[in-house]
Every structure is written in structure tokens, then in C-alpha cells.
Length: 88
Image (cartoon, rainbow, N blue to C red; front, side, top):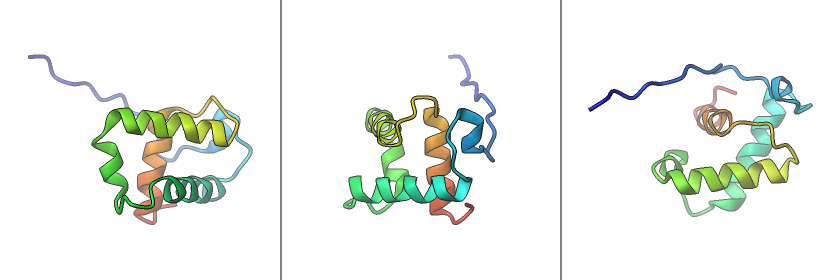
């Protein structure tokens, strides 16, 4: 069995790095509101992460809502976790 390889990404991602003209805090607020509006019944962000198909769909819908196709899934999900933990 092969070992999984994690690709390091910038945990302190700035939305402007991918063409979104918002501060990290503004982007985080929009992301958290979108998450809460969509998944009001899910109490934990981590719950979304155990369903990869749902997580990918969430990311696609979020990108559509902010009209930006350039934000990678891992940035969205990582920032979502960081917002939940109060790191943004």
C-alpha cells in the first residue's frame, strides 16, 4: 500500500493571491455565512469534511456565489476550518 502524500499549501492564504479582491477577514465572513445558510443543520464544519463529494459541491457552489472560479477547494475548506476555530 502506498503512503498518501500531503501537498503543502499556504495556510495563511490571501484571497488576493487568487484574484479575489477581499481581505482575508472579509472573505472568511462571507464563507462562514454561506456555510451557515447552506448547512444550518450541521453543527460542525468537520462534518462536511467527512463527505468529500458534498465538500466538493459546497466549494463549487461557493465559488459560483462569489463569482470566482480561481479559489481552490483546499483553500476554501482550510479557511472554513480556521474561521470556525477563530483564527481569521
